[in-house]
Amino acid sequence: MIPYWLLYFLTLVIFVLGLYCLVAKKNIIKKIIGVVITEYSINLFLVLIGYRKGGIAPILLKDISEQQMAEKGVDPLPQALVLTSIVIGLGVLALMVSMVLRLYEKYKTFDMSEINDLKG
Image 1: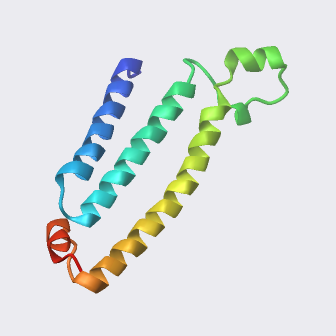
Image 2: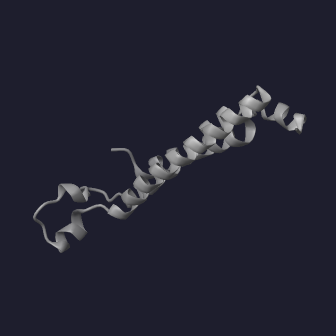
Image 3: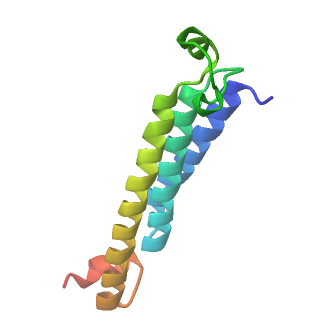
């Protein structure tokens, strides 16, 4: 089993990779990929927060009492938040891609430095 601290560290590495794509890259498509990577790392972090060692997903626990659920079940709230976040992220991604397509139609480039220089 992988230690918890390593999973949190890998989540941090993925988050930093996404931020690097956002800050350092000039191509708009690469910036969108950075946003998606950052979003996925946050979702992974939320799932890791709700995990309990030896825990079982609530949907797999049948015919048990609330006490047993509290002892064995993982927290379902972060899982619900991640599902909501995935749906919202998909909508935001579609909006970003449509805006980038409009920018490409107007300026014929994906490079941010060329778009900033045009000012029109």
